[in-house]
Image (cartoon, rainbow, N blue to C red; front, top):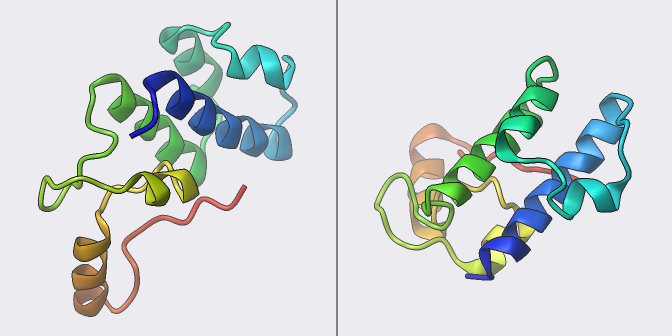
Length: 114
């Protein structure tokens, strides 16, 4: 997996774009990405801003902090770097996602389109 800093920037970039599209964001993109916000300050910024994609990315930041971002919540196997690059909020590995899609009839993955 990429470095924690690189993954954090990837997640924050997607989160910033969503916030910019949905709300006025009072900081520059670079300030947002460069970690001028602590995790607690980011929580405060997001407290009254919600939506499925924002919530998923916020949870991805939590998983990054606790070291479980690349761990599948189903089988506990690794989620590939390429998959996380496409969707850093991904919670399932490719195999579990395929298996679950057969059960529920669609992909359990939440597609973050930014």
